[in-house]
Image (cartoon, rainbow, N blue to C red; front, side):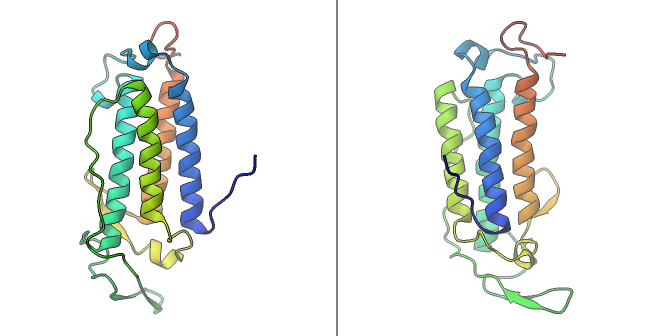
Length: 194
């Protein structure tokens, strides 16, 4: 099977995001209903990390959230986008300048509601979340570095990320949770496989 790769730095990150999500999805798809719903970590203080179900639900909701941060930034609704309005010229520290072409400020955001997802539903929702992210980034695959590093988003948990950093965070977020599920011995004890 031939894989089609997107062009550009943003395209590379989306390809890797899809790859990480496919590995995560396969790990979850391989679980039985009972394994998916079993509380594997009853002592964690993070409610999103008690079972494969809570992790998958969290990963899907986070993915929609990342795409919405990006949509806000592209539309100019996020004031941390170097404090400029859509179409404003931006000066870089090296003296060069460029103009970001944002979509209209009426760009639609996800109506996704955080909730616990059933096993089969979670597999559909991760695919929908990825499609939503692709639609968010479509046409921006070859965005120049000076543009994607100028798009800044302050996230609810504190840091300010540029577009590249937020996409890298999204990729690693999935990888970390896939590893977490891989380490659980859900077929026997239901606790961490030491």
